[in-house]
Image 1 (cartoon, rainbow, N blue to C red):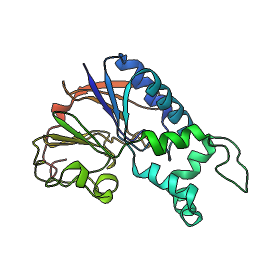
Image 2 (cartoon, rainbow, N blue to C red):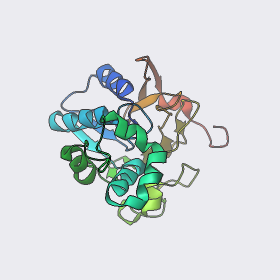
Image 3 (tube, helix red, strand yellow):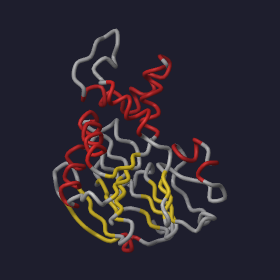
Image 4 (cartoon, rainbow, N blue to C red):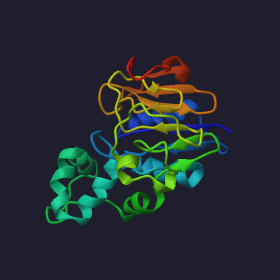
Length: 232
């Protein structure tokens, strides 16, 4: 069984579909998506459609990112709308087509809201790894992590988690297009919505695939990026 992690798709449907085609996902595989499916990129609607379809056919675990949180807040709180619009929300709304001026969220289908609210988890844990969107306190269990740690705190050097498990996260975009691998902490947000790549990591073997919006693909192994944060 292969366990894949993909982070920070940000509306980059072409890159995501290219990765899916490249890894040839099997029914026995597990795909863990680490959040930030919407905003910034050109096709947030298409990314959510794709994820919902994958959930129906494969073993997929989808985490919530800070951009999903802000999108939900913008829907429910008028005072949050301007922040979200400037946070990448305009691109998300544009992907749904022309909306009602009185209700800017009218084109977003209920199935998408249900996915964000009910299907997306705060974290995921396996025998060897801890999967989060942003970060975690190494001294606390996943259940005791703050929302700030899980969704907002930038990647940083910290002690290994007390469980001995490796943290796999996204959120902190690496403008180099290369992941950060500190051994006990790995960040795979490689700036898909900018000039970087969307990264898919098979966590058991360390095999990596990267794709961009041009449909280009390259491969590597996460061990090639082992470093200290100072060196990165």
